[in-house]
Amino acid sequence: MGKIIALAMPKGGVAKTTSAVNLSIALANKQKRTLLIDADPANQCAIAFGLPDDPEIGTLYNVLSYLQSCDEAINTTENPYFDILPFKNISYEEELLLSQFNSDTKLFEHQIKPFIGGYDFVIIDCPPTVVGMTENVLNIADSVLIPVKSSMFSIAPIPKLLSRINKISSNGNPNLHVEGIFLTMHEFNTRASFSAKKELYSLYPNHMLTTAIPKNSAAEEASFRKDPVIIVEPNAKSSKAYEQLAEELIERNHSLDENTFQSFADTDNLNEL
Ligand SMILES: Nc1ncnc2c1ncn2[C@@H]1O[C@H](COP(=O)(O)OP(=O)(O)OP(=O)(O)O)[C@@H](O)[C@H]1O
Ligand SMILES: [Mg+2]
Image (cartoon, rainbow, N blue to C red):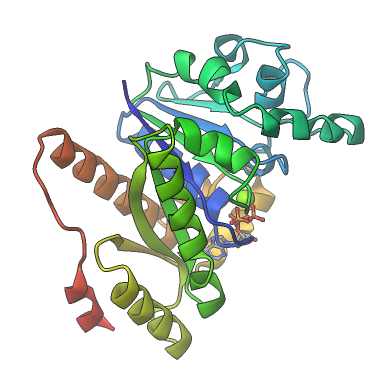
């Protein structure tokens, strides 16, 4: 059984989707069998990969509404290590039905979890909330990876997410833990980014990952090129950083598998600032 990692943060625009798609490809490039699931009704993973709006493409929406089983719905890709389950470009009528999914807390456990054990990593992109679909995902996830844009506005919602994680881990999903917090859209030469990084390391020293994803125009432009930056510009700074994040996660989980305790608080990093 591999690891189910939710990309979650109750704040819009902090690079949850960008991180989910690029990290998934980075893990697949390292020959880890990886499934990317989009649990956000905004369906932006499909946009990131330029997937057509084609009824032949299996979707999470179809699985949650019992139209397809999860193994039928998962789409393979040219990369033998990478599969994807997009949300679906839903209509108004379909959107009205979403509240039914959100109230059925066992839906993911019955419809998704039994079918994803063959992957090394299952990366799940969540919407910018802690309720509804995110809560359903956290009920089956092993860990939560938290992207934080380098700004004070993005730090403020973290306690709400951590408190939901604690609640869910003591109420039915004891496996659930924080995988780590990492900086996104980080600018290595601005005071605002410096202050955000310093604040995060002082508030959450034990949760901070060493990788920070730099702000990089190539990452933003990639969505127009219908593939993640790591595919269209593998040498871009953000692509290299996502490769590093994948390595950090693989190393971290390998170490944890061997029951080796490691603290990932890299306070030395502050000296680089
Ligand atoms: N490293 C980066 N450098 C520059 N721009 C970035 C970077 N990462 C993400 N972006 C841009 O920031 C915006 C928000 O990113 P993204 O959609 O991934 O955030 P999100 O947290 O998934 O948002 P939402 O909560 O709305 O789903 C997008 O326009 C994206 O292209
Ligand atoms: Mg998103």
